Amino acid sequence: MKRTLALCPLSLLALSLGAQAQDARVQAMGGAGSANASYLAAPFYNPALLSNFDESDDIGLLLPGLAIRGRDEDNLQDQIDHFQDLNDALSAIQQDPSNATQAQTEQLISQWQDALRQMNGDTLDGELELGLAVAIPSRTLGMALFASLRAQFQGRVNIDGDDLDWTPVELPNQDFDNLQSNAQILGLAVADLGLTFSHGWDLASGDRLMLGVSPKAQRLYTYLYQADVNNFDEDDWDNSQYREEKSGLNLDLGLAYQHGDWRLALSGRDLFKQDIESALVAGQRFSYSLKPRLTLGGAYDNGWLAATLETELTKTELPSLKDEQQQWLRAGLELDAFQWAQLRLGYRHDLEGSQDDVLTAGIGISPFDTLHLDLAAETGKDDHLGAALTLSFTF
Image 1 (cartoon, rainbow, N blue to C red):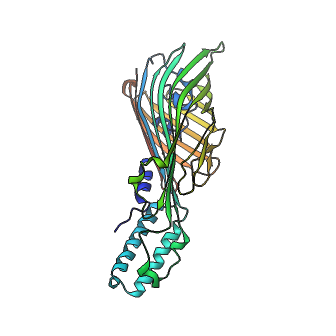
Image 2 (image 1 turned 120 degrees about the vertical axis):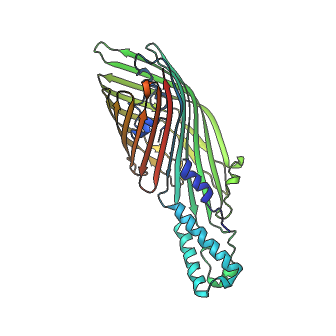
Image 3 (image 1 turned 90 degrees about the vertical axis):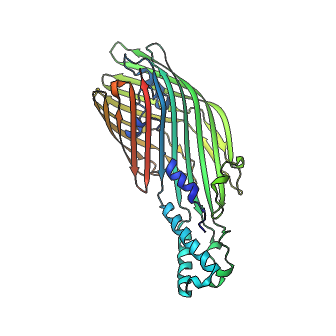
């Protein structure tokens, strides 16, 4: 009989998980939003950009922005499928030895052990981001109400040597339903609900200085689930014993300087450090620190061509079973056809080397500059795939 192993939960990770990307336009441009985001997406990237708007803009609605991303660097999904087939075949021979010759059985056992051994330490991970916003730009004091969710997950298979230490003679007594090898799911989610305020000053030189702030209520969630590989069941996920949560307040700040078609920006997110630990599961727990993230970016926009480049000035700790950090360098390009349609390309590179380089692309449709439908996709090595969708209205 087919076992769940890590297949069911890890499949969900691969399909439903995705860097900061509540706006598909920004994701299509490599995720570079600190100097490039629209006023409506400003709460998610740089609150100062709420003051960067056209005179015709009175109110904007982002309902919603959704991004998903998954990576299977070890081809773990294929390995799991292969192991399950071998496991089922051995179980069938155990119940009826006439299903195979001795030579076939010995070869199958060797393949089973190799397949299990090769999965040791392999991971599958991904991200999910969701954003909602209502923005009212103003020359005096721009305001926006926003909500966002950022979730990161990682699954890992850990192989116990005892599951490998048996010979064909012991096949009749081998318990394929209670292996010591286990699979884990580790996750972190951060939910924000806040207000963004911004103001811009027109300088005597003709340049413009913009400052923004986003006070927000914040809730952190950790998740740690572990079970042996043959009893790993998604029906157990909602059990509260695997979750921990913590509430607090946090703050984002942003600064932007506009000189003609050029813009320089600095954003700081989650300026108050937050610490949280996971539940204790099978004698293990992990701790996570949500630390301030500083990003410096520049952008050029002449109406039909937009280009942007940004770098994170701080390293970000990943909720990872590998104890990883990341620090992104991002770049993007957009061609705009009379504010009716847009074509976008982007690239990002992890300066820490924990993540592979990613190429991004997307399109936008914006009839009458009122309805905006933005789509983005990304790809990288090791079966890295991602997608984003944003529906917004500006009046």
